[in-house]
Amino acid sequence: MICSSRSAPRASSATRFRRRSGPSWTPSGRSSRPPCRRPEAVANNTRDLKRRIRSVKNTAQLTGAMKMVSAAKLRRAQEQMMSSRPYAAALERVIGDVARRVSPELHPLLSGRELNTVDLVLIAGDKGLCGAFNANVIKAAEVARREHDAAGRRVEMTLIGKKAGEYYRRRPEIPVREFFADAFREIDYTFAADLAGTLTERFLAGETDGVFLVYNRFRTTISQIVTVTPIIPLQSLVGQANEEKGAVEYLYEPAAAELMRGLVPRFVSFQLYQAMLESVAAEHGARMAAMDNATRSAEDMISSLTLKMNRARQAAITTELIEVVSGAEAL
Image 1 (cartoon, rainbow, N blue to C red):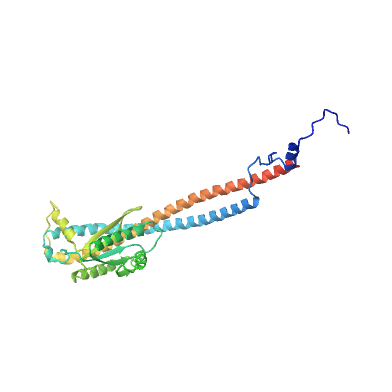
Image 2 (cartoon, rainbow, N blue to C red; image 1 turned 120 degrees about the horizontal axis):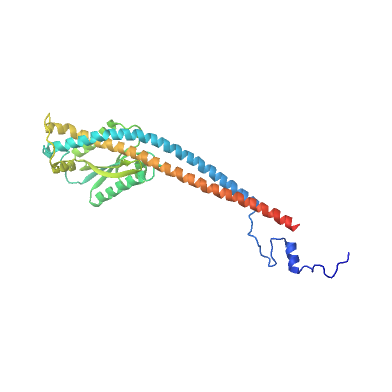
């Protein structure tokens, strides 16, 4: 066939280069489309994302279950704690009122002396996964211990809770008198009374000059107050009682001095018992809040990973479409 002189001009070398190299290349040799990832790499990335999503979902189920368990335990501990608070407050008021009427010399726990040796009773938790619950109370105990050390006092620790024992086991230079690991398995007033009796005997024997209690006081479900309070002697309680004005005058039978002999040991025991109840309720509240935050974070991570996986799938589909279109244009 003979072509006329008006036929289409012959393609230039640049045009021929473009046709031979495919529609995705310019005459300068640079790509006019963004580079595409290989399908194998996209598939591997998708599998990794699926595996991570499955792992995070399992973690979210675990933290959700722990949150429900902590909520149930918190209700029981809170009921027990709240039911004992009125008795503790009433006992403190009675002792304060009686202390105003008697001389501090009538009971050895009412009068203080110079602090040379101090016992710190630290109440921590048995388990972790409760946020900064254990770290905060241990930090407060360490601050109190260093203050007494700086004042030239000898400090001995009495530890309640496994986490407290684990912390001070790594610090053998700090003297620890006693360690109770399973005190929270079943909170019993007998345990608190026995420990209070031991501490009282040490004070009466002159082995210690003061006992301080360090624990987390329950405030709300998501809030705890780290408390450092003296429980032996009751000198601060006597001072508060003497400062009260307009207090109601009661008549006591038997005499006030005899009442103090029975009430003071009971008050010390119940202070320790109430602190343990407060600590348990605060621990369950802290763990419930921590597990709730962990569950929310896991749900956010699942959403983020799902979005990444969908984008990876979209990128894989786009890559395949580009390859199909490029192959069709090349033909």
